[in-house]
Length: 459
View 1 (tube, rainbow, N blue to C red):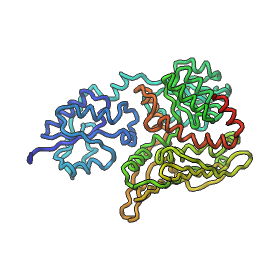
View 2 (view 1 turned 60 degrees about the vertical axis):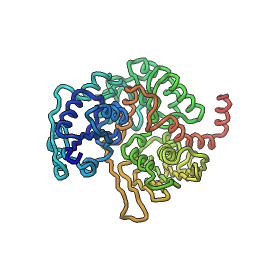
View 3 (view 1 turned 120 degrees about the horizontal axis):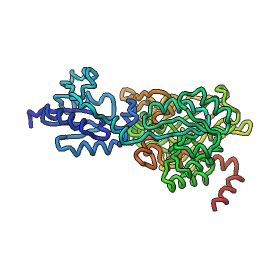
View 4 (view 1 turned 45 degrees about the vertical axis):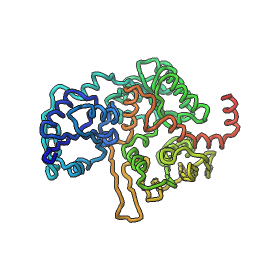
């Protein structure tokens, strides 16, 4: 049809409702051929939309089922609208009138038409009517406790207002000065016997196993700072317990949930840099300058920091076949550890973690066609570059985020609970096992007697 008029529109279309339907019908009435762009969940999160309930796949299927929609595409980045106007020779871009003026810049590509919204209904309203807010409690007064409270305010699916610590005076002082946390407990069993449905654990590493086990048995979903256990037997036990109790157990490695990090993985999956041969990543911190306790620092660089580069290695190269450690011990703990992992096809992962020295915290993923550079601090991924032999072909990706990045992890945790999902695609149980394999093997290497005892107990 040579003279057909093409219309395009975009939206999230979470929990498809009559307001969406009417807007799409009005858009189709403007022409002959309607293209609908459904925003990808990763792109939504990069724009601050943290409370979307349904997956991209489910939302796409819902729009495809509408007989008046001719084509469905997925919107993945900021500049795509302008690109699509040219690509599909669009005559009219239609969008809701709550965006009046925001897309006037697209008039140079096509005509922009703002359509009236249906009053009295929205996805936000439907989410509030169909999903109760998840009551959540905090375990421990750790280094990220206040940051977690602040970031959770941006996730409407959660209500955090309760905390536990065995230090009664600290709990009392914290709840007195904190307007969000109304209830404090110094008895863990009493804390778990409250109406909370989920807990976030940020305590000493050796306490994680006990706190997680009790919480799961009490029927609570668990988000815990990594590592969730310090030996293989305990990790396996906790993951099995979560599955048995039908509860979510998620490791709080926030990098895994950042929009830019997930876009990075998509670019790698496309084969943009060819076959990946090597990944290098550094994560160091001078904790002594930050006034952290000596007990915390004494856990060692590998236990505290290796989850971050291990996440990158595991996601990019897959499961490691062999691990070698080159550590520097001081005062009984590793202040630095150069970790080399060998993977399928001979690919290498080279991780450098340290609590007693400082290095550039960047990462490089090397392939047969080019490489990806992630500037420091790479674990707070906001941008990355795809570089080639010809520097003129460099591709730049930028995904700025608000706050310290915790809200994306918290949003995923809340969304999974609301949807009744037992695992996250961004950080699966297999991923958790993979990223903890390094520190678990290192702990066995450092304490062989304890490791043998644990294996015997498992039998």
